[in-house]
Length: 447
Picture (cartoon, rainbow, N blue to C red):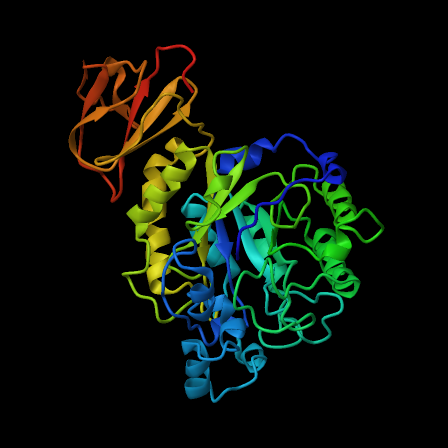
């Protein structure tokens, strides 16, 4: 998981179009990183992406899903951990130890639905090259033939759509440490050791075409580039994948990590790629903790709780983005307790306040605050002031009618105009997390 800053060549501008309304309105999605790396479930919880120097980051990688890479970096703590705890076992032994014994896709997706997610995007092949479906060319190195002995992509797709949510697929197009390995990454994987040849392009091309044909994903989410051999126009180019995809899924969306291609939305990740935020449609992703894959080393000090996840969601949505929050199941398929507790907290808040999230737009002219914490979203002529403190709070909200201040259930909230601001007396929250106060906007042109 790393961001890049692609520039679209002329070939791909032909695919430019309006981003489908369902994706604009959804605001919130769930990412799932689940793989053989969920067996060792180990990484150093060093810090958020974008806050640690890249080479230091790689040697002390907090992403548990990068375990296969980090254990090959000489002198890394992960390498020592692997030698000590797992006796230096070949990585693929974790595939055979991955059971998915407690995996209940309907239970997982019901939690995501209650948390207010509009779409679910599981990994289908991460950088370790293990496919979660019977992908062409993988032989028995996939979850259908080994480990779980299930098509996990199909299971999640069916459960997601039964719940009325949109389904997406993550695919690592830029890296595959098994079929196209060129040694461990110690710096930026976008710049070193990335497979670019025609053979790997053919392999990845067949996979993505198969994902499109089998699962018709509503979101096609790529990562770490695309092999250079597949970038120029040709019968096995990524442009041909896009043609096939949009024909099969006319209202599907594609992210910006497929290399120098087309995208419907840009991406940021933790603190990296912030330059992509606010430019057209964008999406921020992060884990509940510091890792995407389950990391047994992490504890509550690294995890978002429910109110923390809600604040992050509202910060992103208030600035015009979507938020893709990742969960990392354990090897049996359970959502670890702290992650589940976070999502249950989001679900409790969304049960009361979801109208301040879904289908909203940013509020032009409103000024957010971190002390006290305040964010704004808008539905039509109603502005939702999301405030994480009780008592009197002055809102920088031009054009708002103080006499209209109310909670989402219609309960009036005391408010007055003062010095060009609106001072509201925010009641204590009914559920943990910020309180939403609605105000009618009378000034034309807001929003």
